[in-house]
Length: 131
Image (cartoon, rainbow, N blue to C red; front, side, top):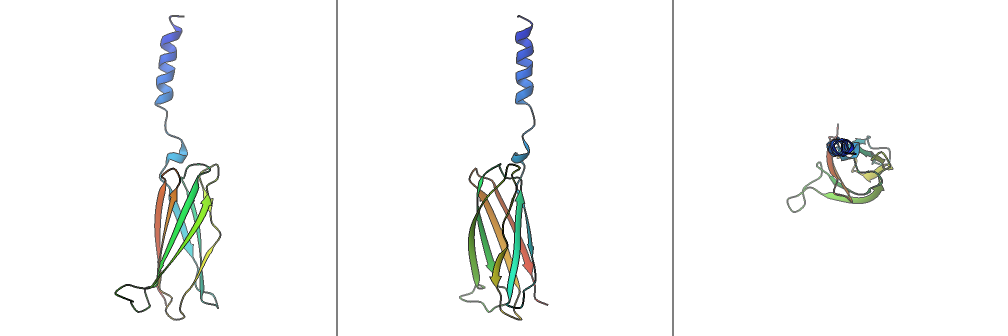
């Protein structure tokens, strides 16, 4: 019995020093936008990984139209909010977001911020310049 107690203490210490699980990694986002279709709609797909498993996620999209004239010193903007839930692996994929652009003025900057209910946070930005 006396030999068993030190072995248990060592085992408990090793268990506490074990590496953190995968979901404790820094969350990352992937954002891919296409070109405007015939109706001048841009479609963007968002996915993420590294969030806590089964976590509720608040998603904020901010589109800044950089080719349009400034209004009150700022470029026109549109914002969208969505909700998602990560799966057991801490990943998620959102249905595509679609937004309108003005023909021949399709330049925009899209910033996406995802905040998890447990404090996870990730931000990404993509810029598209009209050709």
